[in-house]
Length: 286
Image 1 (cartoon, rainbow, N blue to C red):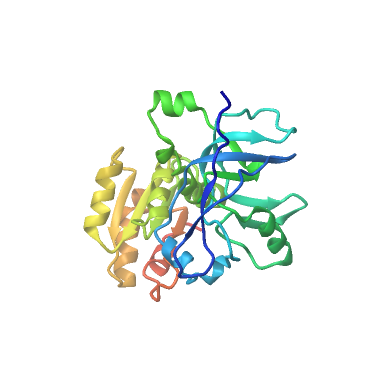
Image 2 (cartoon, rainbow, N blue to C red):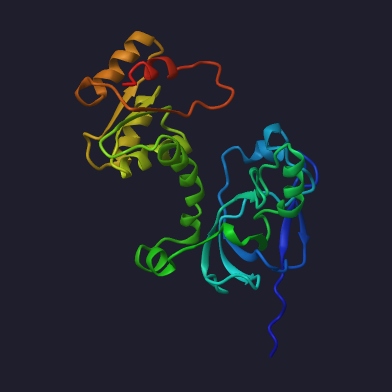
């Protein structure tokens, strides 16, 4: 008996502020340098509604589009130049697509277009995101996951593994940009948001000391209790808005009162007050 051909239902955005439209599309075909992935899980940002309403112009979505970047899925098919990936394996899909002949031209598939001529060309080829059953992605963007370890031994589901995308953003700040080393001290403020909270976890995981800043003591205390671990490596300071008071409190929280190596600022866009920058930056050793 011949198996029925797979369907590819998708949710397409045709106008900002309008409901997504359900459409049925052909399953994409893989060619050299590409992979077709069956989507299992994707990450939804807390501001997704603003993107779909067109209220975040910096994303510069070009419509129509199947939104949201791909994240975790299984290989459905691949081009003839794939040598390690096999049909059916579990992969994490890096959402940023980089032009193969220009590393400075980038988009985020289904999420951020960019504004250069090159970005528009890249978008036309790779714009369709994860709000469909099957997505075509660049071969080099597929990262093989150890399913036996992650799902079999540790019990993670694809819905949990999609958080890799969020951790990757925070890891970029802590590991790639700051190059935080074990025993160094980092100040993170604010620290109760999605990316900033994950930055706290990553900084602790690489062996750093963390001073978490925030304006809500209840949120800071809850985060400290949730993360657990060595209580001496995670401390928090409630910001008052008085620069001298906050500076003194942050300095006192650092090991030996000697200051910190890194300050990681996650102040949200549009925030009119610099609640953390002045006091935190004054505590840096250099």
